Length: 451
Figure 1: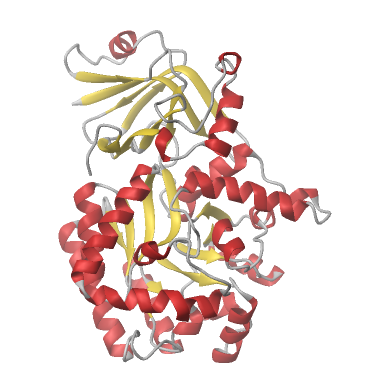
Figure 2: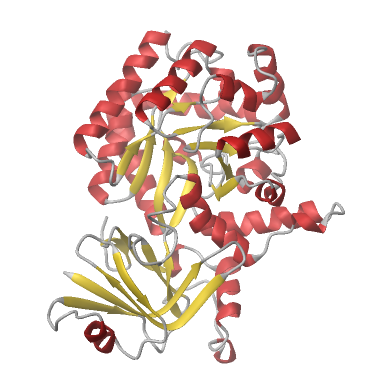
């Protein structure tokens, strides 16, 4: 049945234009596609008659006029390690390379056991959906069966997901790696075949080619993945320039590249559907190359701070035309919440600006754009998702600021100031304010919904 959503809507049109519609209606068809967005709507019934929707052919979902609530697009997490979720908040005193060996690889190796995969993957999907993440770019592990299970779970619940089996045939622990190029190739193709079988058109779940990072892959594996991406048009996700020691390691391992980005480019891995996580220490030439190739950057401010990797210059990237979205980078990042990540992105930009260059500072409007439309751009889904424009899919969350146990305190004089309410939500809100979540028009999470 078609549905009319009625009430207050908040969404981004451009980087600086966060539109607030206090009395609007969105009509969604049976396939989850938005047919119309009517501003200044009198009632759902009047809007339905205007668009020739007969009485009885639609349902109505409204925000409570007496509450501080609004519809907001679903969040995009453009970089999250689903297998690392149990380690959220565990990074000790280490930096990136030590952290991988101390915490990450031992945990990920346990996913050879499907009971572990089931337990962790079901939990992380429930947690991210509960935080309003309707689309996630997931890293799994090297294990084929476990990666396939992540795809099965995401599809069964209804979360949009890019599912990546990690490829790593070099500079990795003997107990946790691809033993050969041929092993990595076969496992990668098996995952693609499985996802193609369960979701033939990749409507909800899509495979994503995942060289862990250049320092954990041979040139042969990187080049094979690049050719596979070209041949199949499958997206790619990997890491770039997160840590200075990592940059030096890539340079020593792959001297054929003029830079970290050039290594990926020479192997055919930089394209319009490539997600590059972190990008903390890019050079001017690398920024220009990434922009030319149309690749996107996943900004992971919580992880970059927690592992003392550095501060990504987001405005510097945007100014060059590089697409930027947000990533939690669980578990280098300590939270699965994109709202919290947007908060961190704003604060990191202000720390950068305190070094003497105000141009680095991000606004509330800009970080919420990165969390939605920016993420859609990075994932190659901007024609389909990111806001409430007609023709896009209804991937949305209902935010209620004065719900039971809300961490946001709303005072009577603030209810008529939507900009203030949005700011309070960004800085104070959490998953308790996410009362319903839809993907493709289907209710997938919420206060009265059991995952």
